[in-house]
Image 1 (cartoon, helix red, strand yellow):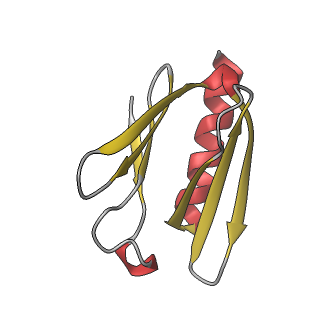
Image 2 (spheres, one colour):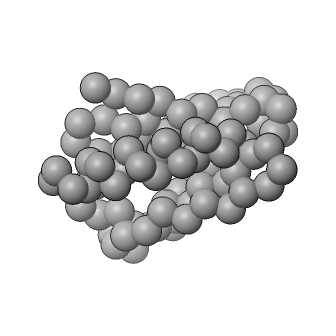
Amino acid sequence: MEKTFVASRLAGNWFFRPSVTLTPTGLRYEKPKLFGGSEELIHYKHIASVRISSGLLFSTVTIETSGGSAPVTISGLYKSEARELREGIEAAQATH
């Protein structure tokens, strides 16, 4: 089952909102742009750490990989969504 987390418009992501999707095989990070965008698929085995920085309403989630690429950062998630994302990654890593 897939679960998608999309950054809030209220946190400054007015037009191009990044999203993270938990898929059965890995994590898909999509960052749209005016022309095109980028998409990255990271297998759960390659996720080294998940860090959450919380503010008053919103959180920033930073996902570091063991593959050497730049960390995936998504800001503007509600605190409950950030915790749910981290717990989903931990549960998927336990089964893989």
